[in-house]
Image 1: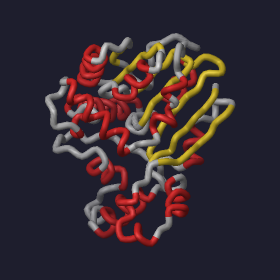
Image 2: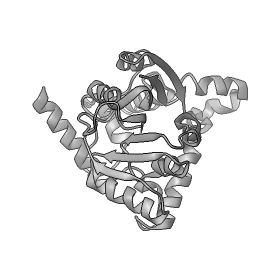
Image 3: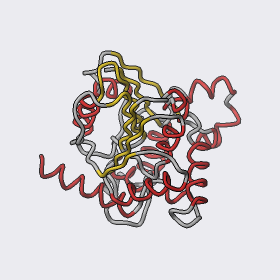
Image 4: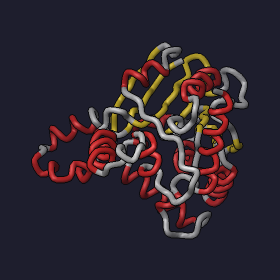
Length: 269
């Protein structure tokens, strides 16, 4: 089991080393100021809920750890709000780009390469541990959540986003459209393998591990926390295709928080 997990993790690391998350959303030279501005604009246009869910504005003077800092986009919001920010990532490529972003925009922050399943921080260190769209890529997600709990101080808050098993995206795009109608299941591919090829698309052989969680499964992952809230977010009208004109705004808002693509967990230690 440990050997299998090590192989999976190396596959994940290799993929993100070659394709730092978010770089495909900007056509400016990587590491340039314009590059970071374009990445940020794309992120918060597509995932408009992130600033509220993350609570960037309420983190002044708090010690924040971000697991999977990527290009430093969300980290920059924490730092700008006055948080004492630390970002970790599995790859050197991400850490270098995140550090460059902070330097260009003159923001304070600390960065290091780290494994989410084995964090190199003392117990009870951080006020907030944040991770958006990362821990469903690591082999031992439950182990990573235990590490989140360990490094949080008592009363500290974990804010974690995972992909939603009961989302429109999963059942329509992955299961029906690609798995059944696209004959991917007949080719012997699992839903997870289809997601690996579609959600984090690239032409690189080391495709990432991708997992999904229901609300109940997400709640179980955080069973060691004393208070857990699970929300669902991120659905765009364009994803509903031909059904979109038939759905009122009120119904769409209900769908967005029921069959959205993200499970967002807020858990207090």
